[in-house]
Length: 164
Length: 164
Ligand SMILES: [Mg+2]
Image (cartoon, rainbow over all chains, first blue to last red):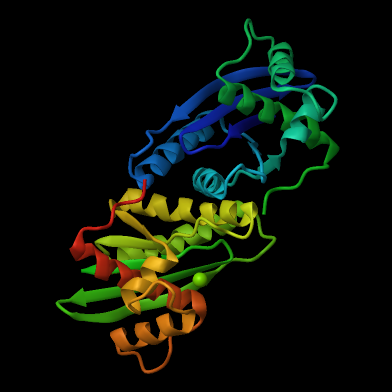
């Protein structure tokens, strides 16, 4: 199974592609797509769309997994993360890829074993599971890989549901 | 000038197209695009994208104007309005149409003359300005036409800025 993990954001969008075969998982690709604050919003969303589309057509994931966080510090932040998600959903629609969402406690539970783990423990486990030489960086890239691995963990349990 | 006004939402997205020639404005088109609660999010966002794309290629607006509201009752609502905006921005990017945002007080100021007007007064003025036989309905359709007219009002003043 190939999974495209996404840490959504309008200024920084983390993309991580993971392939799982049996109990083995490896990283196929990871990047952070950056858009410029102050650029027109259509250009920023268009840039995210093209980056996600390219990753999805290159690696042909069976699923897209996104970090879902409803309790943003501000309304405006939630709104702008939504812009990025619009681009992700359009790629998913056009390529017929289901999209799953996981909140931070689900990620921590899957990778570290309890929902109260800190960011560093998650990055450490991402490194260990994927056999990376160093800790994944920056944070948005590590988060995207963690989300992809989270989907690999929950999917066989069938306890997840596509976003609606 | 042709303006596509949008009242964004994931379940109900209002679309209103207005043409202004000199001091005269007329309605070219208005509809509410509805998506089904519980359908997969990619299908819903894809449906909105196609509807906005169709309106934009049919009527060739010089600008898209959207209702902007940062103070949603809930974070989750702001997030999901953002999904719809992602679809709108992608159409705008692909067809190179600038997008402008106006908050409710700006709409009321433009159409009624003061920022505290109520919804009914706005709908009444939309009807009067566009010479409609009846009050525009439903609300999201009236809102979309109001936003398009708001852009017609502010644009010559050059007091607006594309969304970023
Ligand atoms: Mg409305």
